[in-house]
Image (tube, rainbow, N blue to C red; front, top):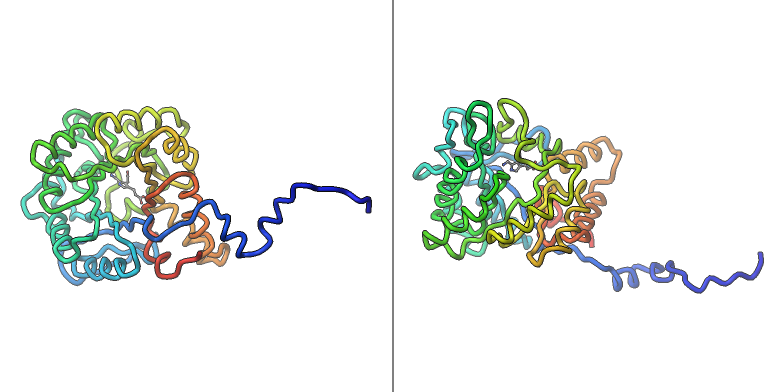
Length: 328
Ligand code: PBG
């Protein structure tokens, strides 16, 4: 072989684990993770969601144990989603702001027992709506401005229960400013808003809708959730949410939208969050169950990539599993 000079050999910086560790550009920490959980009314019930092995719909007593376990592992951030009985659903999602509803009762119970846990709520009508849509429906249309006061009533009930962060996941226009005003007028200036800024109309939400029986009763969500062919539109949504007073911006789903996470983190001075959604979880679990993928590696790789793209907070159903057995 001819004597050949290669002055730049990037492989030198990969030659040992010690060097790779020293120069790693991103490092996923358990404190970046937010664990979403599904809440049931009642006592001592725990049902596994068939398309999300390892994830349960469970009652407050089980949720309290879960929070305690997670806090010990270093997870401090939680999101709660209610599985509401069909008999309580109506057109105006009235149960969402009903006095003493089980969702608000459980937020209070968690905050009383674990004051340092951060509880993020879901602000959208779908878990409580007989139409299964995130907004108020009239003549087959999802009405924007009529939805805002309903969201504000729901958010106020959550804030009164002790919620730390509101998570408007509904994609109505103007809702961040509307919620900010409602909070400030009622003395909740410390309640934060993590806006679902760029929430796409996605095929990846299927298992979540199974978990809450919240699939739309007609049509789809394309008149309010974003078109997955667009990224400029996400920058517009980000600008609006910032102007309206959001504290953090979220992109959802995560893995198919790393460019959106990256674009938002370059444009905005606010912290960026990303939601590795139910379908992303189900895909990895299913392939791992078949022995086609190494689950632990896939969890670390996907979470690290979402972090690398620019998300400081990652909502993931893998949060607990990862914290129990991290791969550094
Ligand atoms: C609805 C909501 C959805 C998710 C969070 N909030 C589903 C939807 O828009 O239909 C999905 C989360 C997931 O798939 O894990 N407000």
